[in-house]
Amino acid sequence: MRKRGERNSWLYARRVLPILIELAKHPLTPEILRLRTGMRDNHYVNFLLRRLKSEGLVECLNPRDRVGKVFCIRHESKMR
Image (cartoon, rainbow, N blue to C red; front, side, top):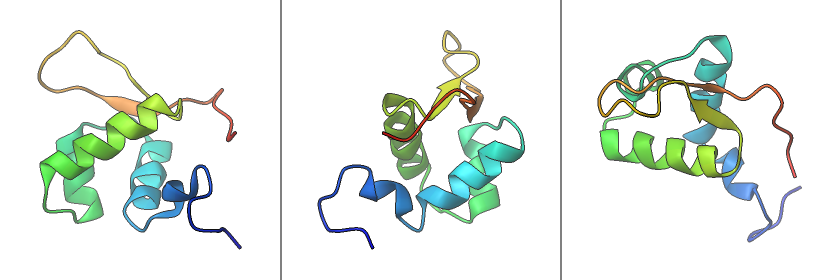
């Protein structure tokens, strides 16, 4: 059982797992992720993607594009 404040415990939040599951299927844009996971707020999806990227779990396939960024799971990522 995870304890409050445990490192990476935020990964088990009810909104994070659906994002990881969808990205495991194929690369998607934040907008498509929002629609497929049933979230209403684009900002929250972008926040979660930035956090997942900082943890090394996802990567952006086209980081230089300002619009239409595509994210995918980093296959070489490991939980710390």
